[in-house]
Amino acid sequence: MENVYRVFWVDDECEHLFNIRQKAIDANIELVAFTNSEAAIRNLEQHFMHYDAVILDGIFYQKIGEQGDVTSQVGLMKVVETLDRISVKKKLPWYILTGQDKIKQDNDFLDSKNKLGDIYDKLDDRQILALFDRLKEDAAQHIDTQLKHRYEAAFQIFNGTLRLEDSVHLLQILRSYHSNKTVFFNEFNAIRTILELLVDKLKNLRIVCPSIRELNKVGLFLNKRHRAYEYHYDIIHPLIGELFVQTLRITQDGSHYNENLQLRVLEYASNYKSNYLSTSILNNLLELLSYFGKFLFENQIVEHNERRWTKKNLVEGFISILHETGRATFVSNEKIEYHVPYGLVRKYQLQVADQVSALLGDQDNKIKEIFK
Image 1 (spheres, rainbow, N blue to C red):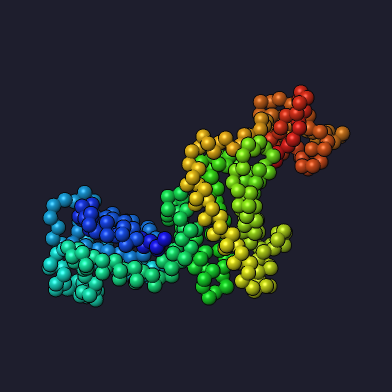
Image 2 (tube, helix red, strand yellow):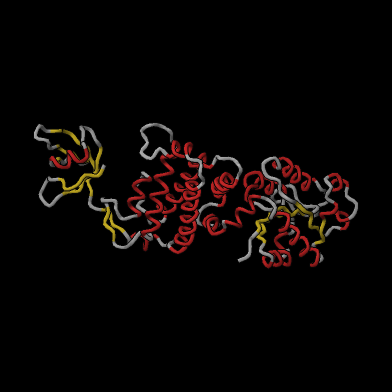
């Protein structure tokens, strides 16, 4: 599969330029089109990180809903001004594709930007193809475009399954990993953010029960080890379930720095300078995104997803009394009292006022299992 380039395009006639649109598709160029500078600038300021290049008509509308003939280059100037402003964050290559002879000839504004050599005729098929070839060649020099193409399988999940704007977190991680600086371990929060976004999507589709709040417990659920649920089928492939748990565990530990951490990831990383740990974590994340990009696309029907699991009949409430015998009294939200045996009190170190869920036993008023 050839690399795809995402191109920002402003032309007041864009909706009718079928020839250009088809040639772009044939050239693996995704055109994101706008008819006016107002809407274009609003989008560009928010999402410039996601574009590889820019194509501008010489003359187009300034305002949303504007109609009639356009004679001013003010809209073009405003978009170019925005490109100049964001260039300190990302410098996007930009070109003029126009059918206006007066734009193609002497143009003081484009001359001042040293762009007279970047003007192409949208009425000439050969020039359109020449522009697309040059655009791809120029865009491929940017690190962001290189990373999106190199890790295309992982970025696919952001093309409709997760939001495109959230792919900036993955770009941040990859930029850090491929930089000359040893800063990859500063990106644990970005990895955690991606995992949280992924879990939110799993909950929305009810692949994961939405009432599970903690990420660690989501890991248990994905591996069919959350004791509050009955599992009728695999939730996901067991290897991916284990990979999720390992990645989450290392990421959560690496997001903090204190003596009480079990793995002490940052302490280890500061003493052992090899690149193998960061490589393994990154590869785990990339594998998860590649897997879930396909998995989520294929599992969009909520009713089917809910058939994988059933929540056990749990009672919500709190521990009201710890008895001298070691047993406890559990009071449900419906004000019904239940007996908690000594073994469960000791196992979960229950205290008065603890909010827990309880699985009822076969005997009346007796608790079979506790879920904290």
